[in-house]
Amino acid sequence: MPRIQFPDGFVWGAATASYQIEGAVHADGRGASIWDTFSHTPGTVLNGDTGDVACDHYHRLDADLDLMVDLGLRAYRFSIAWPRVVPDGTGQVNQAGLDFYDRLVDGLLERGITPFATLYHWDLPQALQDRGGWEHRDIVPAFTEYTQAVVGRLGDRVVRWITHNEPWVVSFLGNYEGVHAPGQTDLGAALSVAHHLLVSHGAAVPVIRSGSPGGEVGITVNLGLGRARTDAPADMEAVRALDGYANRWFLDPLYGKGYPSDMVERFGAAMPAVNDADLDLIATPTDFLGINSYNPSVVRPTAKADNPLGFDPLTADELTAAGYELTAMGWPIVPEAFGQLITRVARDYEVPAIYITENGAAFDDEVVDGRIDDPRRTDFLRRHLAALRVAIDEGAPVRGYFAWSLMDNFEWALGYARRFGLVHVDYETLERTPKASAHWYHDTMADNGFDL
Image (cartoon, rainbow, N blue to C red; front, side):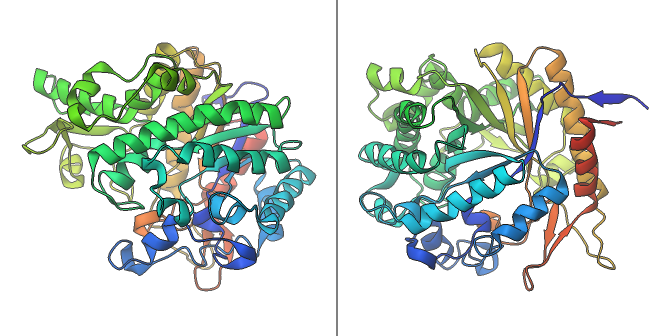
């Protein structure tokens, strides 16, 4: 069979996020986050699920670290909970919260696993949201202050830093579409949030460099190629609008191109005030770009007069009728689009290095006699990694890959109804059981490749 082999030194890992796995939301001085508030608001999360317990990773740290060793992870991407470190968002630092991440980092290094730390993965302190959150510019110095606290404690050992995870989700899903915390539906607010996220990223980069000598800094964005139903001009224009909304709105300013003019025109009066100093700060050079990507989006021109975006995604039923294979999320599985996306980013932006910081799939896993055979997830990983290898061959500077996710966890507005993990979690007993895909991934990491 054909062999897919990755370059020497390729980084293999898995990823998680603090609110999705830690639990212990009241432990050791942790403050409330917007996701605590949102998930406890009736009607916001499927089945009324919350992250109060999640996977109880906070209390099961050592066992989970040993599990990572058993899986053969070379690297682990985790996020730090801002309200665990600075409960009120600014001011007093909670040393007990930093102690947890101290133990996590030391435990990883003792086991030969490289830590990749994400400073913000959506769990904003509620105290800051009460003062305007990401919508107001005061959040920028607050994020810088929080960054200083974390890097000051961990910067001597953590050498890979990610400022933000998926600013598109934070801004647009949380503040325009309203399906994530804090649940707003205001385009102007969402655009202000997006801008302040990017400005705070730029402000944090020199703080990280100062506190973590020799470290590398990046940001993680979620990206996906658009696909049209046909090659008709209207369909292609819908794809262009999707690309501006989901991809170029963040990539262009990060790489010195400013906000894309076609989208500025489309957003019109909803645009926040933007000055050249902001754009210069956003474009502060970084060492790598993190890319999260799961699927392309198939779109049509919008039929809604009040939709400023210019496109509508096809429904799951329409995608199935069009011949797409779907995950349990209703997302189309198109590995070649994943590879094409990475090639496009490498071509259009001067990115010194790329890490795939999330890629994976949710399926309806079943436990049979204590085993979880998940051939569709293994096939998803195999096919996407093969497409990634093609992108590398075409010149994309991809340095590593992190499967999403290490274990089943709280899947935001879908609660515990979707499972992305390599490791199955029984939410009643919290027992962890590696799935068949975890064993395949173990062998792939060990061999730095696999047979097709």
